Length: 560
Image 1: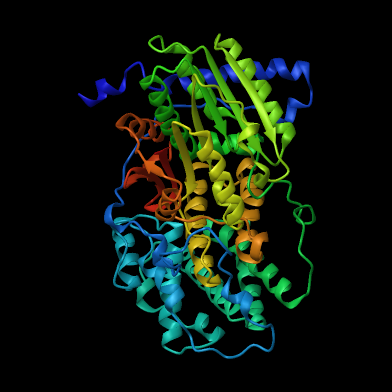
Image 2 (image 1 turned 180 degrees about the vertical axis):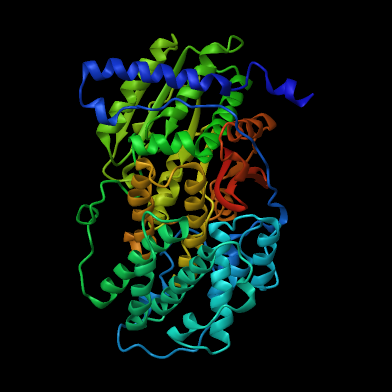
């Protein structure tokens, strides 16, 4: 039986992770006594809470969307000058009346992959089915329906703001609550505002945003919340384009987080604890690393982490290595490379050293802190001939897409290190389209799935949810919508583009084992909201999504 094969000496034991995190909490208590600065930055509330959870896997199959579907050339690569935004090439002046083009919004009709979605552009078929089944429409479905209505009304020449005063007709009759109708109308207002911003019709866009802002709320349902942050981002883009304001600093908005990394904050750990994506990907990745170490009976393992954050993922592997008698480890080394939060990196170092000591696991840790990733050099990594080298890249490569020369330089350094394995976790979405509207729509769908997940897994008034939405997601949305050129660091591309990019460095995708995939399913099964988390394979990589919308990819590679 397959299940018997999973429970082998080379399997990361998920059931013991709760104990691992409990041990970390005890270590943290000791550290608080030693250094009070860890009080707010430590790993409080880390422990998992497995209980009566259910799991359901929803296949995405052949309906997986690809990068090329969104208007970016198939032969695009990261070398050379980044593709500029079309909007950036237009001289700001008096807005011109434009003929409506439905092309950027047509991807609304085809986005997603849940089997119950309407594919013929008929909104009523989906809403009526929802009424019959008594099921609640997801945030992504509401956004897509709003897009379909926007296309329908715009092509029928209702025109202007009067579009939103036009009755929806029988398509929305029979819905169980009026909230869905209001949410569709609100999302439709947002899409219309984005379209007008794309054509630099800023006065019209501003009037539409006034109505969005009156209906949206940062404490409401997921649609109201996401429209609140996207309307704010559109407003900032308008202000930047018209010269009304200078670039707003995060501190001026009352934001205390960073766009690309939260660090070991309580909010991030709460997200880790209540949302299945992160831990599922981490356990699958750690399982693959464990298998690689055991397969070559390596006495020493050197792990190069390109973004350590709080380091909880390494505790999973440390526990497994400490308990593996068939392949005793003489030394486990971690070298973390980063450009921000040096103090947090050092704090993570101290906690992992303490945890390794509690396991009697030989361990060393080194921090390579750089002012810029372009300064990353092979000589900064102390490798030895008798150790197996593994590179772990958790959603960090995408931060260099806006600087292709930096990304290429980092990859050349990794290539020279000759790792036996490279594990890559990236956002499975295209925030890099040269078209503003396409990029807007793609990001809106991806964030809709995230906000829908937060709604299902966390209470609306959860203080950690408020922090996550108000810092991490808010910063990302503002950067995607309002920033330009290299300032726009919140970018991502789909796995197909990464495959083409990695091939240039002689990298071969080796795929995840059945044990790794099982680990991901096992983790999802421990979450109360796991029934909506989708797991699928795209080629040899794992794609994790929410109700059919792909969100993360996990792929593993080796250099030829």
